[in-house]
Image (tube, rainbow, N blue to C red):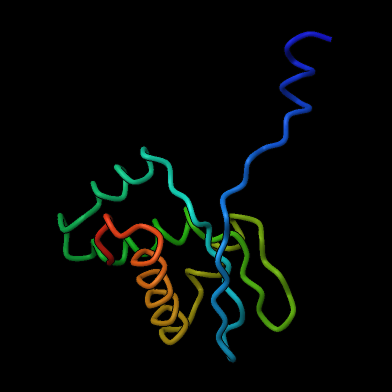
Length: 114
């Protein structure tokens, strides 16, 4: 009944999330917070290689995606979200890139968009 029990009973804070809807691709829910360490890791990816923007998009998706609902089927496990992202069509990837850019501009204006 010491410190461990108090820590377990504490509620975890959750970052606010924003939903982005597309008629064909479903609803993508993105987290509204990034830790300072994650921001530094993202900045380190920038412009070093020609595929840097693709790596940036995948990095952001991995860190920000909370849930993706496609045809009323929710995907909320991190590994499944990333696998679905990687398997996406070029149109889906373009939509996700646009959503991530908009989300960055709205929530993280200090970060450069991919």
